[in-house]
Image 1: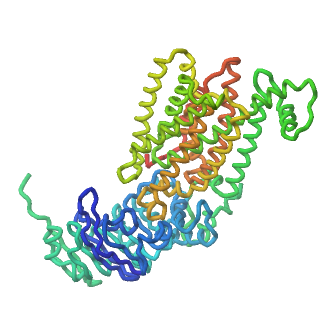
Image 2 (image 1 turned 120 degrees about the horizontal axis):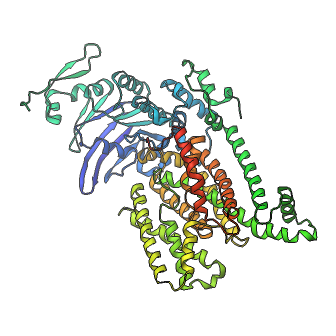
Length: 259
Length: 378
């Protein structure tokens, strides 16, 4: 199922945070959203998992206007890993993962046999089985991100949106996480900070600056010396990855006057 | 209790290729978390509650053995006959003590469950059913009615009605003051507004007492701030029972939503649970139950704050379990607190709030120190 942001604008307290953003994520594609801090990436993403209502424009999933679906129905189609990963109560890992089934269950209806199977399989795939009885508040950052991904996956969505999912992860877990995402077959819209990881993981990349989309296309088309300088204010050399051919950026610290 | 090998986690670990789980020895918690374990726990607590109720009805200035109590209660329920010399005992038990003990159980159950809901909806470990100004609002209502003689048409229920109205007005004020222009409720603003409003109501109450002509208002305030079941009667019991039991049932239906709310508002939205709509519904429900409870028993502190934490320490955080166990534990606790309150310094009565705190605080602190318990990552 494809995801289309069509002319999305968000104004909060008189401030225009996202300006006329149009972006398409084809079925099964991974599209990365990059940009400097405060460029409106998270705000745009929130419109997709409905934590925010756009001031104008629509989000379409398949043929449906997302805002016309009930919250429940919307959550059956779109799952999210938001940035507020903080949990109040000390649920066990297994319990948090099982909450991913919430949009498919009524009231306090219990999980069925197939759903318990699904949770167990997803946890095994994300190497969480041995943590099943651990309290989520005692996990490391990397473990917690995996739990949140497992929760989003058992939601069985068609579309997955993620807000900086590789934060707090070490290199190995960053790579494992994005590999998992690539293998999931889902339509993915992901906000990433690390441009090199974005280039490696995404089919297409959209670049936001001051709330507006300034470039969109394949990593090769988008990640150029000129654009990185213009949007991020950083001089970078772009080389091609010797094994994968993905564009990769090399940075050098700029000489600064002595303190 | 099911053997550990039947628990879902153990089955999963065996089925996957993962190395054997290095879980610590399966403790009370994992036994309680299985479905049969939970059902067994609730059944056991229900029996304890029943036994406590019978014992508590038998004890007082005239002591009746549990066997005789049970027989007389059965006679009352089934319409059986009793000996002529038992009539006085029967009347003490059935007309005075039974409604009182049942009220204690209902109030304990209600306060514990509402405490669980309130802590989840304002996302604060320090919240209790009275954090939204409900108890001080009720006090103002009750004292206002006493002093002005309003609502006289309601007879002996005038003061309770005044307290209920006061509680609802307080909740509405807190709600109106803390909702943003878009009508969205922020949990933190809700708590802070509630605390501020409570102080305001206390000031209003002080003014009423200051200008009140008699000392009746003063004792009324003491009654309402410390709690008592002295006014229990068969007349008011059905209303309280109906509200509390219905409220418990509705809360239990909301239990997964409460779980999801604890994951944060944005995550809740992404799981199809609108945090704001649920918060408003829960707030209304909690205010109604608390209002009814305060109207018949005053503001009994501690139970609604501590029972939720105590139960979570044992059965884990999932609300379906907490909301099944907490009301039963709260009911048992309150029945015994009431017994102590009316027997320890008889014929005088100790205020309930004093006992809940004196008994509960040491227990709570001890448990807190023994177990690594967390709320909100702290």
